[in-house]
Length: 626
Figure 1: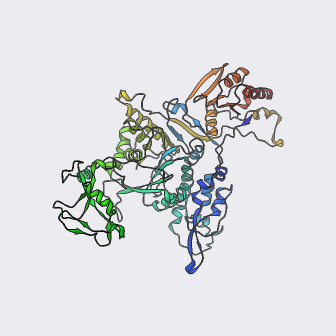
Figure 2: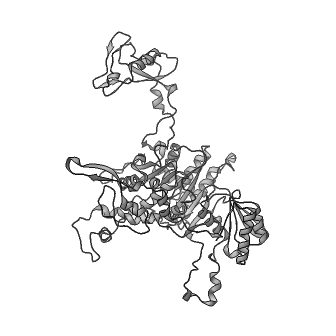
Figure 3: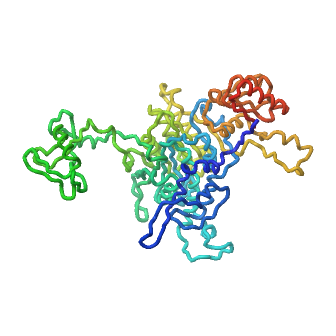
């Protein structure tokens, strides 16, 4: 019987199999020839390709056009290196554990992203993150990634181990950016794997790291998949104490997983746009807008005389031509779609009818506060939920996340991921949008258990960490959504499963022969740590088999043993002592997968007999032991 490997997937091996699709980062530019024969062409960076496929840091001295910083190769290695971690369920901290489709993961987001690689590969429609801005300010996040000058110079090779400067160089701002880049790079690489083919990632950022974020996203997602840098009006207040300029906006940088597939919803009609349409000639097709009939450039087949109803002959303006051929113009004229002004003597214009327009408006890059909220409103949302207390200096407003959700088409079974969850704005925005009757989203939030540092004078909160406060906000937001609305009870999923990143459930039982002691041999017979529950083991099995972590779980008793049934017999697991009756009953249900605890079999013969039972009764079942 095969053993489950019980650790996160080795992404290096996966990259070998999917190199052509998974590695936009190895695309670079190189210069060939000299003088007039010099040309730039696209090329493969074989040093980076070797790094993608290597289990150690690879040196690559060749110069090329790309973003480099001290620690980049270590960051790439960090993204690919497997970890022996798991996600442990916390029922007592969850809401509607057995029925919810939402997840809240407490732990380091790099580790969490690695653990989600199998279960949510290509399943996340939308990613929104609000990472640290690297401003050096005292935010709730550890928001200053500046290295000491000595550390930066040593890492970048500008000094040797004795601190002697090797090259002439000033203390440039690179030392303030390298750690931030190394933090973001592996997380974005792992996040890309989770996106659906038509998925999008949205990242909040300000001017401090906008340029660097854009460049690492170009590497990770590909320049051709850049969508826009939306400008969000974050504040209405002008700060006269600002050094030079008072900043009124931040950016939300958007990339598509595949820009040839991803699509945005069109937005509701603007009243100002509607007012530009009228029916100046009582056309039975209704209101219309006059648009120029000429276009840039000069093309012979689009340059011809047009006679107005008044008899005046028109030619295109200098440097331009008509927008259609003469034959097409004659068709439009006969159909009453050409307008020459009130007196029939003006420049030719084409009539664009309101009734024939495509529904809605194309989104644009300016997000005013009326549409996407602003900082004061975000603070008020926290205060309303926490009885007037304020815990975060710069939370994002739910309207900002709802604006993003409005853009991305939802099929009713889509996932939004936020792995810098912070105050939990993304979860509340999802809950409120779902309650409003829009296509339901489910969420996955990840937040590190960072200590909560209250502002001076703030009242004690009762929350020790940001993750605890974030989870409580989701609980209160869910309760607020359902308050007073009986119709929503049971129809809106306001629950979430809490999972925590922890060390593997497997104990380290490997010992060299000379380290074994006779009296301790019994301690090494069970490879599972003594403080881990059967449900802990079940969730590690879900991770190992790549199943979604919100699948329904039923608990049954078979021959007096506790048995877990996941989904519609996707997995049946028994981690208790295994009896022949348990084995035969599970096999008779013909599950897709069955898993037992290795130490649950009394003898090797019992394990072999179990394999024979499944071979006879349910040969298609994948049977494993831990």
